[in-house]
Length: 110
Image (tube, rainbow, N blue to C red):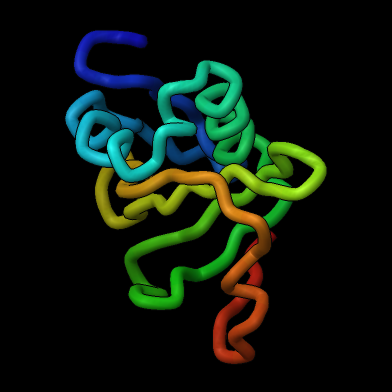
């Protein structure tokens, strides 16, 4: 952790992405996996070297969904607001599948 951030990394395309302590505190009650160091490490890897990146279902222009395999039956997912510099993680959690792949109108970017 550095200052006001849980982490600050460069994504697969060279954009700076931060996960703020404020956003982490907000999200960790609904997503207790955010309290695990191993999950946070996987989340960083999802942004740095993702398995898949998709447009966000609710906001294609402003958000991206980064995925990394976390366990045999789940992924770490980071939803990132891409319209700021640095970009911001707006949500992060463990999920069993890649939800965006089910929508034909969404693009897989990686």
